[in-house]
Image (cartoon, rainbow, N blue to C red):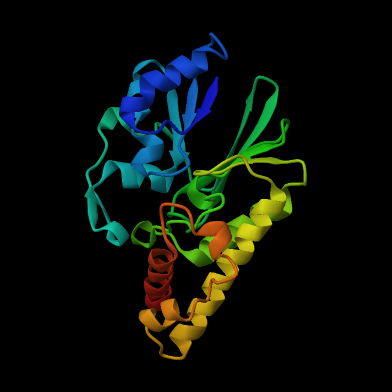
Length: 242
């Protein structure tokens, strides 16, 4: 069996129980979509039982060293050696398991600098990791190589690759589809272009927030953990530094 991400370490037993209801086969591979702990902290528990941990090479680098996430003023210690990916890749990698053709695709400088989306081509299912927060404003981790420009470019690449029947698994949120991904892309483009315009005109973050640049998207995306003002502040700070 292959599993994408493994959440926080205390959830490992719950995950194992849920998987056991689907199959009695062992988990042979865990693919991490990126380095953040809510997607990778369980690595050590699954590796101990024989799973091979796979991730982009930048993800391993982030996991193996202390990281500072500026947006939340949080220092994140390295994971133990036993939790680190043992198979890494610089761009993309293909796997062929159980009759399934699987493409693991690196999206450059998107949510982080090590994002991977996992496309199960035979089943027409794609796992987006945190490059896609369904129906909510996303956190973009500029401090570890992410950026809204990369998110937009990466999601456009995925959008062009999938079809209307593709099932999309977001990093956060409910099962999604191509139409909903397109609406999400429109929101990101509006946030990016609106913020770039304000920066070019020398306007402040507060002026950007007060402009209500995302008024057409607030009802759909404003109910997640990251509120509009915080999202815009991350984008503004990131684009100002570019």
